[in-house]
Length: 313
Ligand code: SF4
Image (cartoon, protein in one colour):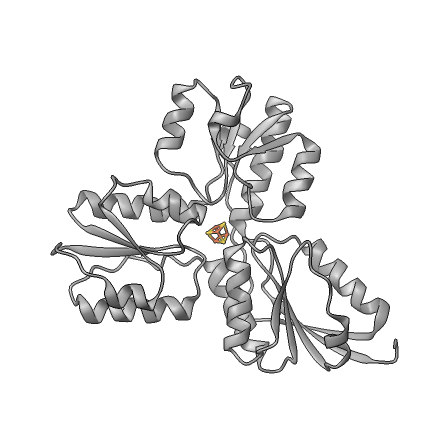
């Protein structure tokens, strides 16, 4: 079997973005500063490997502040952002908190708030129940922001409000979102657009990189968790861009060696919350069985870095 030659096209950029790097650093520095345990509200980023590693260092993950028995311990809010009420609740509990919300998500929060103050009714394009969507909707009073998830929602959407504007989740499909926005613009020609694109640089770059190579691949693998929005989008992008046989490789996945055996070229990328070691391990498994050649195709260099809050330095 080792005689079988396999070409890997390694998509770049892939994996960790600046917001994820910062969120992980915040948890590690908080443990150094405050000692263990520190609580983290929701998975700091959507990846089991990262979460398990931080657990082993002294982080305890909870979904709600109410679950924290010892409220004298600090709590960290995840990279996805939280509704306004959460820091307020933490203050009421007299808890120390550190906010690991990605600055690019906070930017959307501020944007939504400013538009609301300027008298706009808001539309959020995003996926229901994703923590980022819950966090963004939770920046504004109930009834002042509506969720649109897909083209159908956009077609059906009606509102009495004359002044409307929209913001989006940061990890959506760039192309699908364009189609949704086009429907909204056709229906509401005066709809106010955000000053700057809300889909973040990391989401955009990873999707562009996958799009660039998908056509050349017989199979495409995206390393990332099932609840990682941007990883799931990358699988969709690979499918739409010419590699119908694309799938997510998550913590419980079995590598489909039979499919790989029948392929010549496979593409690999990873979501913004997936560490590179998972890509390395995946490639190692392939090298154990096949004669592998790797060609990394990088479409853009990333150099974005976000600083951790001053109180942790
Ligand atoms: S995917 Fe984008 S918005 Fe989300 S944490 Fe990374 S940089 Fe921030």
